[in-house]
Amino acid sequence: MIKEIALEFKVNKQIKIKFLLLLFRLSKLRRKNILFSILFFPFHFLYHFYSQYFISLEMPIDTNVESPIIIWHGSGVVINPSATIGKWVELRNGVVIGNDGVNDKCPVICNSVSIGANAVIIGDITINDRAKIGPCSFVNFNVESSEKVINCTVRK
Image 1 (tube, rainbow, N blue to C red):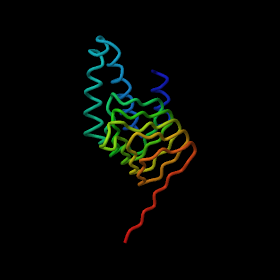
Image 2 (image 1 turned 90 degrees about the vertical axis):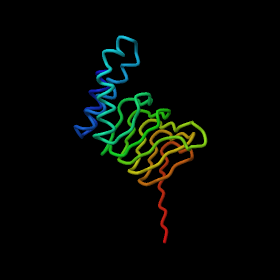
Image 3 (image 1 turned 30 degrees about the vertical axis):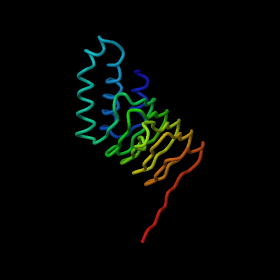
Image 4 (image 1 turned 120 degrees about the vertical axis):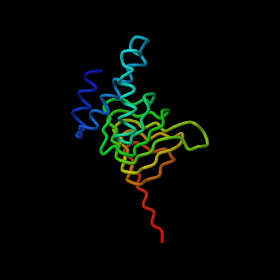
């Protein structure tokens, strides 16, 4: 746990994101047992308050997020608690990861995936290792390893 937090402190540059991830990891300890539930409740409360009211980032404690996660300008990020996020995933502002409204299954984001600002990733899909999702992309399909997804829709 300490190594995970230290690594996330190293790879994330903004102090507000470092503090957010520290609270997130400490809040997850609350799920271990009843003693931890009592001891770590203040962190859980502080995490919810800080993430939603100061950062405007929704990443519930139940979300399966491996360490490290890299968050650049985290405001507006929304992650469904049923989503799975692997190691070394980069998220930028405005990213939405969730279900498609038809069924409750959420995306699985594998390792070393980079997700651009304002990208929307929904549905029962898998984004495989080292994939890159461009800014403002709408992804509701599986993405293969090392594949790039760039949506460039222009309308008059």
